[in-house]
Image (cartoon, rainbow, N blue to C red; front, side, top):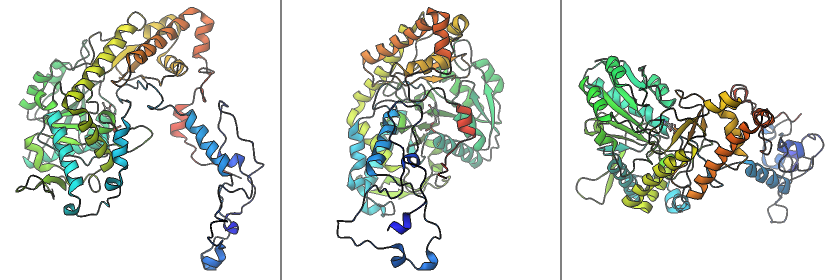
Length: 511
Ligand SMILES: *Cc1c(COP(=O)(O)O)cnc(C)c1O
């Protein structure tokens, strides 16, 4: 097949670089004409040439520009890249709000079983009753956990769940001939919330937080009116705090005819402890990829089921796998009467749903409760360790994450949240979320998660304290930590995040 792949040399082949060089060369840079990753020469498969197989008018005029590398260099290249990566399987990843916890491998094994993964999504429901049962049981478990009546499993992630929830809100009001234009969001909200509200066709009204870090109830009262379709809340909020006024907030919003939307991206702190349905919420999205054992980040598939209270069930996306009325153990697909339609093809990201089902069965009710206890214990223990070193703008017991401020250290030494986060990489930990929530100056939002051992949480605390001491030790030491050359031992130093996002270079010109 060599005539199909021959192309001009892409420059002289380089030797494979060592780990730790600042920039990993692209594959093109150690390509050499004629090199192949593998060949079928000895397998008995005849070597056809392209001209023998394809009519001349369909052949390319110029050879296809593929990089020519040996299998050895190819594997080395990708293995080196993998070694530069930090992941939840490697160590602690205390990235607040995003819940990057360790995911049990059993869940992946279930999702890899051919009897599940090998089913074509077009297979009629009567022939995939096992799959239907998994989906129905998952929906039932999620409704039990959240205290809701029914759920759709279709949305592909949290933000997709939010949009689905807002479309449900819209359908509900429209069915009552009730025109409403605004949705209220607290100023500590996750960035996807206002984006989803806008996509859902509503205007955002922002309410502030009070000095406890909770929704300012007086501001909320002033913002409410009969043009308010609902409110979107995260509870615990992004400060890691449980909204103590939630029952009163629910009452106020319901009194003007609005609905309550719960951003349940992070359910780990409340599993088996408290249910959004009991707090008065009407719509709840869940991020199975954060709470229920699907690895995420890097754009991998997620799932953001949306559970609703009774009055919204008829609007849910369809088709929904449900139990057949007559026999408990048979399942069928149902299109709810006033459905907003499909929000995903087939059943959603089914293998993510299977992982979540496995995770829930693996843990059981008592295990889920223990997850909540450990998530909250780890976050509060870490917070106590950091007292005296960092600032606590809202100093209350937290749920699964704590937000500390680097503003005191910045005043004393010039060291910013970003510098602390970069230095933490050199201690072998992923950085926490920085500069979020927006209402905290120089914020570090730290979520140790329930899967880290006390020893690991202690090591994170020691690292954060040592970093502050380094910055305070001398002007030159502090300067070194803040410089563009820090961190020194990571594969890359400071990258220009704005340029990387706005002027992304996704191609490599081999010529
Ligand atoms: C992660 C997160 C989201 C967004 O979820 P995606 O699955 O990334 O779309 C929304 N709200 C909160 C609070 C989150 O932590």
